[in-house]
Amino acid sequence: MTNCAVESARGRASTVVGLDAVSGTPVIDLKPTTTEFLPAHTRQPERASDLTSEYFQP
Image (cartoon, rainbow, N blue to C red):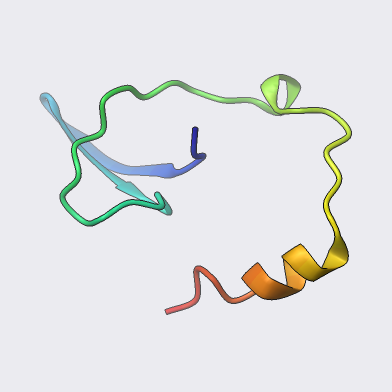
């Protein structure tokens, strides 16, 4: 599961951004998410944040 933003939707075609996938990969299922449904009390080592801090930068 990956959280991403829907950039546009037209008919049965949707464009999403922020998805960790190869461009053009079909998206099988989209579901809305809210903070209440995200995992609670998730922790990770600070090093993991450091390693991925620029992951989504152009």
